[in-house]
Amino acid sequence: MICCFGSLLPKPAPKAPQRVRMIDYYSTEERMSDTIPSYEERMKWFHQARFGMFIHWGLYSIPARGEWVMYQEQIPAADYAHLAKKFNPKKLDAASWVALAKEAGMKYMVLTTRHHDGFCLFDSQVSDFTSVKTAAKRDIVREYVDAARAGGMKVGFYYSWLDWRFPGYFDYKGKPESAKALVRQAHDQVKELMTNYGKIDVLWYDGHWVPNLEKENIAEFWGAKEMNAMVRKLQPHILINNRSGLAEDLDTPEQHVTASAAGRGWESCMTMGDSCGWGFIANNPNFKTVPQIIQHLVTAAAGEGNFLLNCGPKSDGTIRKEESDRLKAIGEWMAANGESIYGSERTPFRAGIMGICTAKGNNVYLHIFRWPIQGEACIPNIKNKIKKATILQTGQNLEIVKASNNRTYFRGLPKKAPHPYDTVIKLELDGKPEALTPQWGYTNCG
Ligand code: FHN
Image 1 (tube, rainbow, N blue to C red):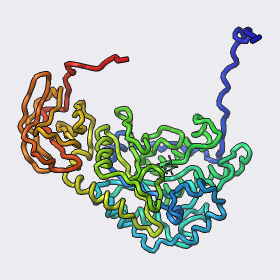
Image 2 (cartoon, rainbow, N blue to C red):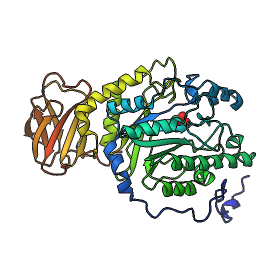
Image 3 (cartoon, rainbow, N blue to C red):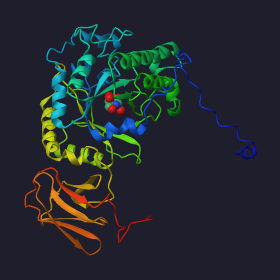
Image 4 (cartoon, protein in one colour):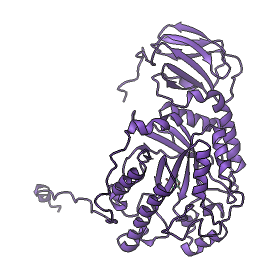
């Protein structure tokens, strides 16, 4: 018989999540700097930039089976560490990375300063597992920062909280000292990165998840609040992503393009290869096509978000042809159409199967991925007066024809699309884009 009295007894108060503090060494004056610019001010360059280069590079480029190889093959840290003796990238030229990013139309870069395997590409004083103290004998982060700045690029650092070399990461209850040492490493190394490399524009945290720890405890476990206060004190202009257990400045949809609510910064990050890995993978047969990548970039821009496209350099430091060719092709398109991406805003207009619209001020950009065969393109429910309609790439003027049911047609399209992947029609309006309510609307559908 099931006792039913239990339902009459006062319910025990829900168990407060167990506080899991791993760091207490901040002095009380470690506080938010009072000179931090507003969110809108800090986000200005990011909204203008729209397009950046992600770089995943480290020891894992030697086995060339992706950046998770140490974990996936359960390689003991001592065995994995031997890779550092072989990591001596003679062909590394950070300026060539920057040149390729610029050619692609990218405006910022984010480099893995340390990934989950624990190997630092920077001169950390709290670790011997660095590119300065092993075979390479180079501060690769320094070379990256100097080249990026010389190339006019904004500088981002990726940093992984977790480090598989610490047993306490996998068992923080059973090995608390190791877990505390891991958290301490993170705080010390981020302080090094925020102190020793000049003005940093983006701090791209990753690896914040902890086995057997509730999501709501993650920020507390890592001491994220104190860490981010320290970061902002050292780098008042910086943008911090949402991977410290706290929302901070940027959402980071990964391998998909999903817009955040208006007013919230976001950035979709994506590999050029299929989603199996971000570090170099030899003989990977699957790469996204250039039209697919351009559509992801445009979709992000249409949602007032950024697109961080990844490269995984080979162990010699060079970027593989499958990635460099794609970047160059995207750059050709951006050279003629970047106006429709940089500083883009959302629009209320829908372009149906043809493509998607971005906006900027009083201009709307119709991105046509699928070229119509009847020489005309239609956008319904434009409330504004359209002063001019031109093909951005060629400057060709188009005829503007109003039709019933709030339809507007743009006629005179050439038979062959000026660009095979995305031809942009620029609409110059009499004001900020405004839409009419559709004559037929899908609302409150089951
Ligand atoms: O585990 C990492 C992965 O290796 C890669 O760095 C991506 C890129 O954002 N982030 C994590 C997976 O979500």
